[in-house]
Structure formats: C-alpha cells, structure tokens
Image (cartoon, rainbow, N blue to C red):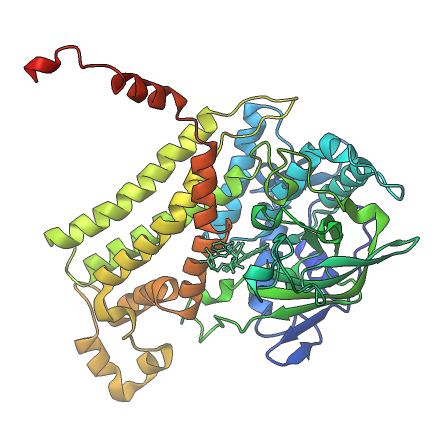
Length: 499
Ligand SMILES: Cc1cc2nc3c(=O)[nH]c(=O)nc-3n(C[C@H](O)[C@H](O)[C@H](O)COP(=O)(O)OP(=O)(O)OC[C@H]3O[C@@H](n4cnc5c(N)ncnc54)[C@H](O)[C@@H]3O)c2cc1C
C-alpha cells in the first residue's frame, strides 16, 4: 500500500507503518528479490519493533511526551518533527529522543527520530537554498512543502550522502580525474517536464528497505564536484520505480526465545542503485549548484537540530555497556579486583563526561531567527568515534572467555547436560541461566557480527573521523593563544637572566 500522504493522519501507527512498506519496492537480499520486506524473516523483527514504538506514540503513557499538536492540521504529530522555538520545546524534544533510545536500547543509529532533523535543518536553510534559481521549480517552496508532508504523515526517512567506494582517486570532486566515461556517482542524465532522471550508486544508506522516503544529498567529503550534473539534493519515496536497494547480509536474527536480545535490532545497511529514476520537480531541493556557502554537510549545516537524537542514543549505549560489564564483573567474582574496578571506572568516566557534555549542549542553546537549537556537538561526535572502540575493548577485557562460551537455550533445556551446566557454568551467587543470559548481551554488543557492525557504525556514521578532525582544526579559533605565544617569544623574558 502506498501511503495516502494527501490525507495526513499525524503521528505514525504501527499498522500504517507496516502497510506503507508493502508498496512493491525493489529490495534484494542475499541474491534474491524480497517480495514483502515486512514478512521477510531477516527484516520483520526490526520492523515490528519500530511498529511497536510508533504505537507507543498513541498511548496515554507516552502521547504527551512523544507528540504535539500540529499547527497546521491539529493532528497529534511526532515531536521528532518539531522545530523548537523555546527551551521548553528543546527539552521536550530531548525527552522524545530519550524515549526512542530507551525503547531501542540505544542501538538504532538511523531510526525515525534521528533522520527527521536532517529535513528540519534543510528547512531551516530554505531561504539560502531558495536563492539558487531553477526554471522548473522553486527550491524554497519544495522544502517547505516537503517538511510539511513529512511532519503531517510522520514519514520515516533514510539518507544517502556518499558515492560508491570504487576508486576514490577518481571521484567526481577530483578535478584531476581522467576517466569520465563511466560515471558511477549519482548524476542527472536527463531533464523532462516531470522532473530529473538520475542514474548512479549511493554508498550507503542505513535502514533504506524499511523507510518511507530516501533523502539524497552530498556529505562534506563529496560537496565539491567538478561537474554540475553531480550536484543535487532531493527526496523520493523508497518504493520509487528504478530504485534498487541491496541490503547487506543480516548480522542478527532471533535465536530461541531469549537467546540474543539485541540481535533483532539490526537496522540494516544498504547500497542504492538508481537506474533512470524519475525525481519529480517538486522533490528537488538543489540542482547543478554547490550549496551556498556555509550550508555544510548534507545541506543541513547551520543550527544543530540534530543534537538530541544522537546524543541520547550514545548516552544510552554507553550506560548500557557499562552496566552490562559491571554486572558481569559481579557475576564472575572479579568486581573487587583493583584492575577490573579501574576498567569499570574508566567506562563510568565516559558516561559521566557525556552527561556533562549534554548539559553543556543544553546550556549553550540559543535563539536564532525564532528557532532554539542546542549548542554544537561536533567535537563530541568525533570523540565518540574513538571512545566507542575503547568501551568495546574494556567490555571484552572484563568479560574474558565467557563472552563466547555460554550454553544455549537448548543446552539449558537438555537434562543430560543440565547438571554439568548448573555446576560448571554458574557464576558467583548466580545460576547458569542468569549468567548465560547476561553474557549473551555482552556477546551481542562486543563479540557478535551485530556488535562489530555497531562499533563500525560508531566510527564512520558522522563521516570520516579524519576529515572531521581536520575540519575541527580548521574551524577552531586559536588566535588569542597564538598571539600570546608570539608575544612571549618575540622579546626577552622579563627576568631572563635569573632563570
Ligand atoms: C554502518 C554504517 C552505516 C552508515 N550509514 C550511512 C547512512 O545511513 N547514510 C549515509 O549517507 N552514509 C552512511 N554511512 C557512510 C559513512 O558516512 C561513510 O562510511 C563515511 O563517510 C566514510 O566513507 P567511506 O565508507 O566511503 O570510506 P572511504 O571514503 O572510502 O574511506 C576509506 C579510507 O580512505 C581514506 N580516504 C578516503 N578518501 C580520502 C582522501 N581524499 N584523502 C585521504 N584519505 C582518504 C579514509 O580516511 C579511509 O581511511 C554509513 C557507514 C557505516 C559504516
């Protein structure tokens, strides 16, 4: 069923979400085309989880914390789509982000709440983008209408900002590239009265197969192009004809009834292949022109409306990893060892630093043009790319071999070996079931394919951390300190002879 977006019903429900994915989209998995993503065993658990959370938005318990009244339709719409205009609204958005992450155990990097701000940031730059003129459409108007459409229908988006990783030395932004006959990066092949026809690949796009919309733009790495046909930003339905989605092998599936609790939270990653896809004119947000100066990554740039969703997720993830490691240390009787305590303390210090940072980001919130974003979190994103790895390492160091050697649910149910499990695989003051189930969480987070994917995600998701560090350096104002140092080294020390 294609969503009837012209008659918006406000905040998404689980049923509406599931039906919206049954739209004939072309999704490929492990060599075959998936007939219905909502019933495919590799995807269904995650889709059901999201449906469950969409339904929470309508419960007495969460309605007021997750939705607000739309100024346009009066419907209750998700707080993820609110542009905050006061500190109170900024905090309300934070609470909504906390709920999404509490419900998803901080494991979804690209959930609906995290993608909505990309469009809000685009909206916030509508005037600047509107300065670029095109005879076929008005970018500013398109952005306003699209933001409205997303909010009133609570659409779930993926985004695709990068080029295929084929030959980085011959990227479209590289003016020295010599091979141009085969353009692999997404580009315009033709204009028609209905829109632009685009062809090319995008690497990569998380959760693409289970989203309503695919937002395409350029990250900071790809923001410079030598040829205008590569410049574009648009959004289309994820089921648009010609858009082919190749989903990677699943890193997690349910095993038994309590085997691996987090493996169902595989949000999946996908390659997108655009084969002569029509992008209607009213869905084009920028074309043939680089973004006006200062728009920054993915056309968002400017105000930090992205802050909460990702920050709440990281905070939850850190606390989860620390708590699981602490519980395991207790369960195997190593908690009181000094070295282990220091490792756990290091994990706690990261959780606390992040909490202080969130307070700082809230403290540095400000009003600009009637919008109240939070302060910058750019350095934090970059810091966590590396700290995530450290936390995974600390968890593994405390867990020892138990992280891979635990009995399965079926082993526990087998009376022939159960007595050995009770005897040799129990823990300190805990039985074998408690210990094995606890350890399985650690396994999910730090030893499984799922855990590895999560850690890789943390490293790359904000773009190349090396690029980000260089960008931080270039944007950081050191003039005061440099001036003082230059003054210091420009003249004799006041009491030099005595030193
Ligand atoms: C799990 C996961 C989920 C993701 N989800 C999304 C998503 O939903 N949407 C999205 O748009 N993107 C997503 N990404 C992509 C992410 O933004 C990129 O991984 C990141 O920008 C790095 O690009 P790349 O992977 O193509 O690596 P590359 O750019 O190919 O980098 C490979 C290596 O080459 C180096 N390198 C590359 N170019 C240069 C250069 N010019 N000079 C010097 N060194 C260079 C890099 O530092 C790196 O060491 C995701 C990535 C991962 C891993």
